[in-house]
Amino acid sequence: MSKVLGPWQQLSCRQVYENPWLRLEHHEVKTPANTDGIYGKICFKNIAVGIVAIDDEGYTYLVKQYRYPLAKDSWEIPEGGCPLASNPLDAARRELLEETGLSAGQWFALQNLHTSNSVTDECAEVFIATGLSQGEQYLEETEDIQVARLPLTEAVAMALDGRITDAISVAALLKTHILLSQFNGVTKDFLASIPAVS
Image (cartoon, rainbow, N blue to C red; front, side, top):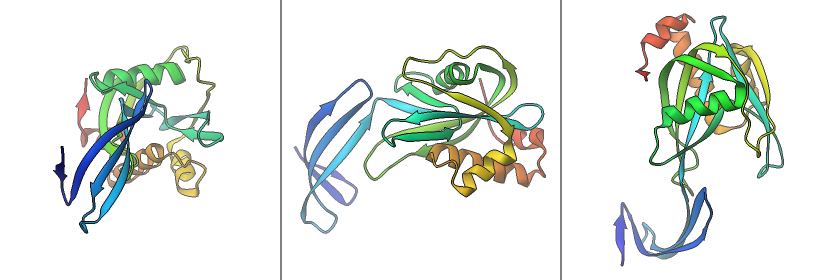
C-alpha cells in the first residue's frame, strides 16, 4: 500500500532487522523527480537525552567512553536513551546519576534535535541541570566511563576545536554558550530565559 510523504511516494516498507534498540526498514519509493528508488530507514525505540550539568562555580561535567561503532574514545555530555513511551526528564535524571553520580535540584529544557535525519528518525531532548549534589555512579555493564569536571568555557572550546565530535554534545554546548553570552555570562539570568521542567 503506497503513501505520500511530502514530495516522496512510499511504495512499500519491509523490516530488514530489529533488536531491542532499533529497527531497520527497506523502502521502495518514487523520488521527488518521480523516478524509482530505495530508502533505508533506521527507526529508534528510544529518544536520546543529553544533559549539560552546570555547578555553582560555572563548571560542567563531561564523560569519556569508548564508542564501539567509531572504534575510539569520545568526550560527551552525559547522555542516554529514553523509551518512546517514557518521560525524557526521568531518563535524563537517571542517566546523569548513572554516568556521573550527580543529582540535580533544578532542570531546564534546552533544545530538541534530530541527530541524523537523512537515515534515522532519532530525536534528542537536551536539558540543563543545576543545583548539583555528588553521589555515586551506577554504570551499566556496557559502560566504562571517565568523568571530568571542567569550566564550561573549556568544554565549549573542546566542541569548537574538534576534541568533542558527538553531535548532541556539540549542539548543546554551543547553544548554552551562545545563550549565556546574551546574558553576559550570568547563569541565573540565562536560566530564567529557558523553560524550567519538573
